[in-house]
Image (tube, rainbow, N blue to C red):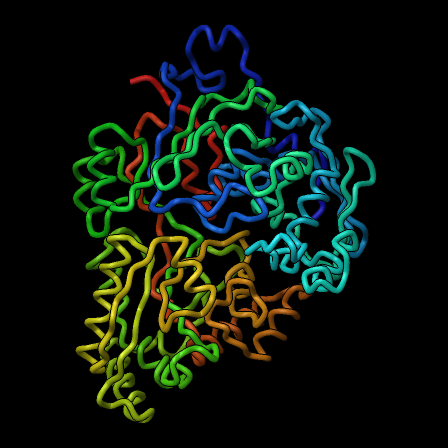
Length: 539
């Protein structure tokens, strides 16, 4: 991909708000009357993992980080790349060297200019083993030169393939040509970091009062497990074009409680509880929305040395997967536009054709019969005992209960269910202290490798510790292929046979959304939304 300044400027026009527009209380482009209170309040399920760009690892945390920090590129409402700190980039002939031209009017919240060196520091920090970033592996996904050696501690972070030519020119060198490289730069782990703030405050640098950020908002309040507040950053280069003044994220663990608070006018956005979309779409048609998401819901098996012996037998894993009636989960429990999944990668993924896998072509009756046969062949015709863990959520609990009942009725399996608080759950799963665990993955960029890399042996989020040499080679070859689809198809076929995970469904966005909040980017399958692009109209 070769993007030019002219192409970007044609794709996105930055509109500066005039004093007269604000005085009139109207949107400068649409002419809509704006609400006096430009505060957006929304619900999150769990406390975010971090607001440090190189540490954050969850979706709700990344939403906050996209407001506090700005990377090279952002996305528009359709998911297309648009300028962030970078105005454009060029490549060499074989697309192994990318040169980004940065804007000269980007500033940190303390008034310092944002420079190429801030990206160099952030990317080296991401790759450095001393940072202990859960997303360290992303530098290898990006294909940065020497990333493997730096990650392993065999090379100094200064040898990573990124350098500042001058304050406003960033040069990136890749191990091999990677056609979708620019897409990876919207990910929060690639955002710049302020070295002086990190040096001054250490791990406390992201606390309100200490944090220095370069996005449209600054963090002004954080009460763990309760709320976080971000407010307009007057130093942001497009502060004049930003309308929302304040964004509040409230941690509410129970979907039903969140819905009650939404109906009471305390929230502008919340997820629709499982099974309630049909009724809410009738009672509140202007507020209940559904749209495709670039996300997969699944359960993983612990295939590491610490995992139970029974789950090392793929016949048992296959049986447990076959016995799950996905249509009951999507149609009877969730009822919100989700689609049953028999492959890991969603159909909403750009340039990806979902392959037909054998067990997905069976009827549920055929899958149930085969599951019983497989369990008997594996020596577990009388069933077995397993523990399934999930992070605290009413919807996760409903799905876990349904699965445990299916396993009991069809296979005689006794399942112990255990829910855990988010950070505890991540730690338990990441350290392989589980037997079967819930998983959810939303694409870091819109290409199939963002999902399939999770089954690569050395992936930082391969919590199953699944390892298959053919899968590793197929994924490595796909990165330099002009047409990686055959590789992706084969990887999905292997997953469907080895069954290191049970794909359950591909997500749909299910929100109750204040009709006065506009314009929510429903066509962006990644759901990379930015508060600076939103506004509230008057009643």
